[in-house]
Image (cartoon, rainbow over all chains, first blue to last red; front, side):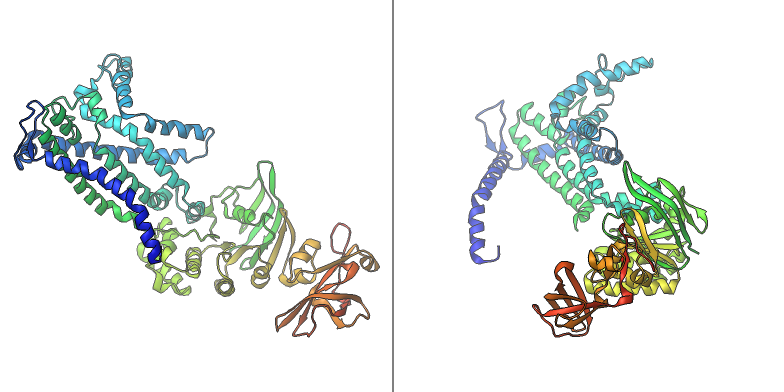
Length: 290
Length: 335
């Protein structure tokens, strides 16, 4: 890409793809911006009128907004912590040479291929159901009262489900990183008299810093928009206990049929995602610099 | 103290026998080089001594104590790896001091020892750099610093110079030798390069196919090789081997003459005659590859310049007391 000619050629070849992506993204964004300034209710068609920033004021002052913002952060933070804290030991185990290692790896990675709706249904009806679920059966086996997961600890239940889905992803990334750790480095540490724990703390963990950063960044992007698990299990309730920003916007648009304030909410979510991304890149992003 | 003795050491990976019984006595303070072609087991033998591999059979004594069941760190040895194996996220200071930190030394003590080691190796200006900010030779020195700072009973080097370019290798060769003499610590050095072996070693162990072929000083190996393998492996260019009638006349199956022990004369008279096929003029030496008919290709090394060129007829006369004789199984026949 050195000469003027190849640069021009490159630009003209890239143009269609860039233009398509641009239109693909700019049209929905522009429409959302436009809708967010309208009084636009599906229950009252034909009454659309310009209301300025009224939708934003309504969305941001809604008590549900702060509650769902908090829920979003709790959900993202807890799932990140769970997947990384469990992913590291799991990856370390899977890195050991055992019989049938490939099959074990496949089994561990399997949850990632189950679609969120299905896994939420499985958890809801087969595992966490207070009457017929596996967990209820187990607790009754010990003579205890079964937990009604989605009523007693709804947020915890959602966190469990989402963490179960994302644990394989974290494990997989960390496992591949472990496999790239130079064997001679571990041997050098062994010669230096480092115990297994010291080797982990001083050699393995620093080596994992970068993949952990990658896991945090990628998971955050997806965890900010968790929806299917909530929709299938708790429907955001009880009350607002499991409503995150994504679910709140959904309920504005398709439960209250208020397209205007849902659009405003969508734009607020974009801003929030950018704020989170900004801090994330500040805190963990420097690990990515080579 | 760092006296190392191997007694009948064997190593097998499953059905594959890598080390088929090694007996060796390494004196305190000596520089011993393991040399051999790739796959001969020299690195495995080093790793057995280090404790990174378990022996299948036999005993390894360090200062008279059997260490076969002792973990690597407790054997009091330190190792320089082929890839250097520096810790990438630690500074040079952290790398050199890691072993001391693991041994639980106080911070001040670690710092003074690390700085002393760095001064020995001219690394003082780089103490706070990361390994990736260093050149190959500097990384090599950090790896050596990591080894010397623990004041081990012996250093183990696993082909430490193979990743350096030729000029740097010669320089580091000198530095390693000088450092070892200065510290007086036993060193075991693995290489496949016989020039490195000859120049650095007090004693050389020639390994082939998991067996020790010969153990002796460089000149012993050069002058009195035990067998065909050692004769061919030590010395550059390679020793010439002649079989058949010429060998039978001397009461041997094979005779060997080093290229520098062949007297070359212009013209075809006397000794073995042949035609020069390639002549290499280096100024200090002249290497001549002579096609000697039924005797095969013979290499001749002449010290200094010799104005012969390809196609010239020459005659070759081996120096009579420099001819090595070998029997049918390749072992040397000593008069």
